[in-house]
Length: 111
Image (cartoon, rainbow, N blue to C red; front, top):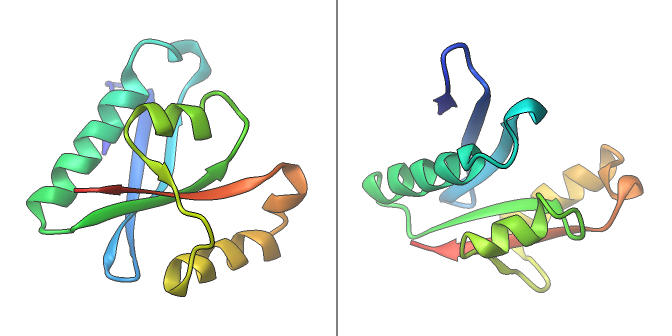
């Protein structure tokens, strides 16, 4: 999903473990705080529901205000001890070095 013309934000949703997974959400810094990210999350959730998914997951930085706390305000909840495909996604992130940049968490919202 893309917001703006020209684009100022996007959301990329993949499938992980048979469920929707918000792989990436980005909004240009000049457009931060205008509700674009929240609108993209809502659009992604709506499309995932339309496609019949039961939940959406994501992995993000825990303490960055526009990451973990933002997603919590959208209804996502912490997944303590992710398993299966979500655990594998976290492992791939760790192998890529993301954990060296800050504490990462997995989150889920039921659709």
